[in-house]
Length: 90
Image: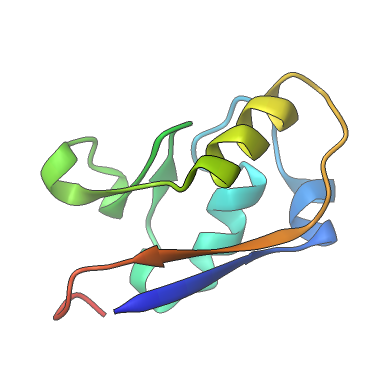
């Protein structure tokens, strides 16, 4: 199943740099039922804040690049990206 993650200007404004639970992408992911308790690294989204590859989804390159820019204090813009999630975990 594909999900669209929509990172808004509000997510960017209230997101915290270098925070796996409060960065703009984590804020956007929590609006989706699938990721209500997530943590985000620069490469993966982790379910229920458990950091294992069995409990995570790889981020697309544009999302990883967004995180790198945001964490370095560079200007970023709202964007959307799609991720594939395992069936039965909605």
